[in-house]
Length: 327
Image (cartoon, rainbow, N blue to C red; front, side, top):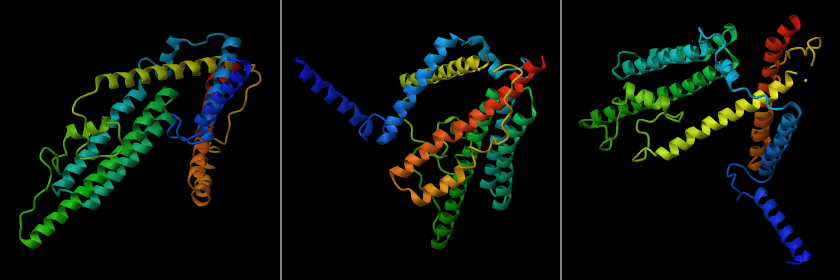
């Protein structure tokens, strides 16, 4: 092939790459246009920073140190205890629904009990993570994530069962008006209310990868073992990769200032979060379609990660540099 043809082929290849990045037909089906390009540039820029860090400081990853991320005191596991205690709130919501189904509780009393249960789910882990010094940051994140998911699941669990009770009451009232016996009308093999109020059904929902409760979840005829195994391996691999990257960057930073010059903890931890409120109003009022989608993704990329970095900065200053300066 002559140089001219080679240049034309190379140019066509670049145009194809550019078109694939900026078109909605690319592999990233959740993004459009320039967002694909932003993702590629973000990956390349972070890869360059990681390589520079690796060349300058060497390998700082320590697999043994990962244990200290989860357990500070081997005789006290507050995060694990919090996760075990979460079962109490799930069972409490289940018992309230059982009593509502048989009429042992009024709807108003059930609403108050559910509200108290959900409020405790939100407040208890946050208070423990804030007040207990033996809990680690990673343990706190895991416990708070479990309780957040539990809150959303039990909220849906209460709502769906309420809708089922209301539907049952309407069916009974309509059947009484025409003088016929009320029937559930459920398909053969399907679970109908209140037969769904069992511990098996509750814990199946708690472990199912969904936040929306259903009496009958759609299921495949068999368990796809290869698919499940691949997802588990991906989860383990990317978790270890994330921990290794954090160790590499934080290990290099542990050497970036001297103990005599400590950066002060930031007081405005809510600064990256507060702009989300007016941003949501602006996006809902002035942006439509892909522009609104791009604005939301930019806020997610620039908002919450900055808040997390500020928390990590404060924790490192208070627990790593401050003791070193005192010593």
